[in-house]
Amino acid sequence: MYTNKTFTPVNIRNEAYNKAFGANLKRLRTAKKLSREALAAQAGIEPKQVYRIEVGESSPTIATVVTIANAMSMHPKKMFDFEFDFKAGGL
Image (cartoon, rainbow, N blue to C red):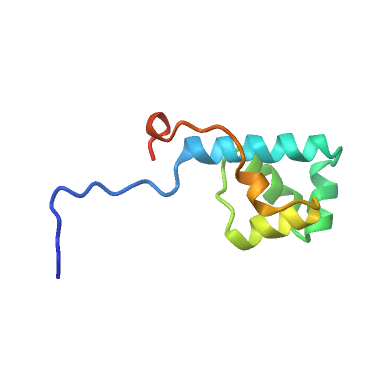
């Protein structure tokens, strides 16, 4: 087994990235003139889940991202199309 004593694990639950992703989701949702409740209903998820993603409290699964993107009639990659400084953000 290989062990690297200098390895520093990356925080995969990066709060700054989650907040940036959530802000982008909110921007996309409001551009489509959808309320959280309407988006949640179309995606088949709870409105509280949409809120938690938008404020960066939750890191959605890939399946949830695809479901939300489909509900907004967009390609999932558009949800990741936002500026984020990975070095400054801690990733």
